[in-house]
Length: 347
Image 1: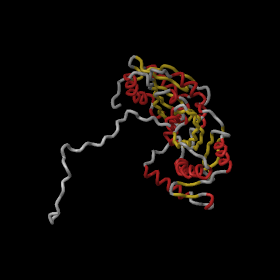
Image 2: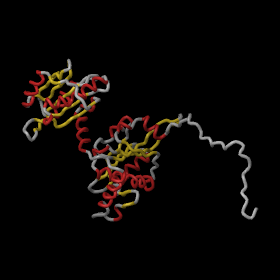
Image 3: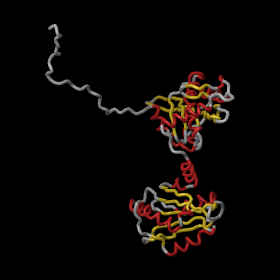
Image 4: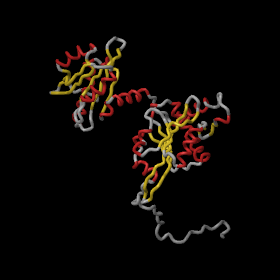
């Protein structure tokens, strides 16, 4: 926000600021009370900052009340002082007035504490974002490159395909096509796909060996749908084949689906481009060479998307029965017979 609230740290909090940087305090909570920034809680260090994080931070937050949490890392800045993280907790259940008040006062808190000591800033609205895993995702997203434009994606794909155009690899082992790059599939991976086709398993996961430029088997299993989301890595791309047993309109069906999982920009550009470029040729090989019929192909960012409702909707989209049919517009009334134009010779 462009303006400040005029709320400042009370004297007790100012004194605490002066002594909390000696390395004994790991975390403290600041709240706005009686129009003052007030120290609400504090805890000392017990282990490393990662060991202490969830145990000390999560108990400080409430579902309906914003606050600030300052958490000390073990690292020091170039000036010799410890580095800190500022967590602005603004839960969805809190009032709009409270959210605005805390958002407008954050700059004052940073100024009075010392903005040069704050290495990381996190704005969180749900508990998952406050946790250590949420903090790590925040770090990964901060390091990720900006999304590429379609033109940049195409250029990057062409560069990668150019760098993988046969250095030390025979022509028979890999083909570069207009639709992508065809890496060889390992015998173990092919055998597992055949097992899935015959019903001896219902899940196969494939991965690309980025160094050897080959497609290998990563996992082969027989699982229920409830275990499928847990099979999707959160930090690397994968291809998945799954036999989805379900009912539709009273019929018991089995549909083999192909799932391409890509967890956003936590993956390198090379990994994203290679998985994207290899997907088409891999599908062609699975369907044409191995003979496996894939009913549906889909792409996801996270395993949490793989619910029964999601797969049902992908395979059997609901039709809009209330959509009005397109009616051809009527012509102008009483337009009569077609008009004949005479030629120059009168005929």
